[in-house]
Length: 248
Ligand code: 6PG
Image (cartoon, helix red, strand yellow):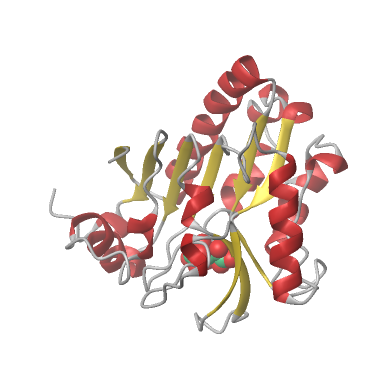
């Protein structure tokens, strides 16, 4: 079982700041140890305050942007200019306002056929892998949690053979009317990460947080339970409303 900590803070602003501080610390250590920091971002609404925060002091001045390489945990199968694009969201809120070299940004090409997208992205990840690995140890992975318990595009009730064999797979699910066709990293990649941060806000997530963290072990029902880094740490940054049904 990986080292896992749960931090409950008052609101979205507080967990966003905690996530920014965590990235600052992890990025400095990763650059010191490995001269680079590989970051996987998330889509959705929760990370938006965090992305904006990173473009402001002290983060803007102190993050090692030149040695940071950006990936995504998943992407909707839409063009990068589509309002639903997770890449597009990060570009609008973060990359257009911070000195990130364009060549350091590795978006998932959601505009292509999903199977082709998955193949292309698996090849991109392999370029950053060490020695004989097929994917890298990501240094900092940001994940959200859906009200139904999904994380990235790993949805409840759906596991596949491919999820246990491939680093990147197409996925399909219905959630809040968002694009159903997705491409997602699998637990193979998430579980090789050094630091996984779940950023969860809002009372509508309380059941999913309690089910994932305090419910029976049921990774099919609670996909975030599939995220068990072999050597890395998992940090849950949860605001009070989202933690409302936690017993402990
Ligand atoms: C996405 C994310 C997805 C998200 C959750 C929570 O592309 O939507 O990968 O897993 O993190 O659905 O979304 P909210 O932050 O909008 O609640």
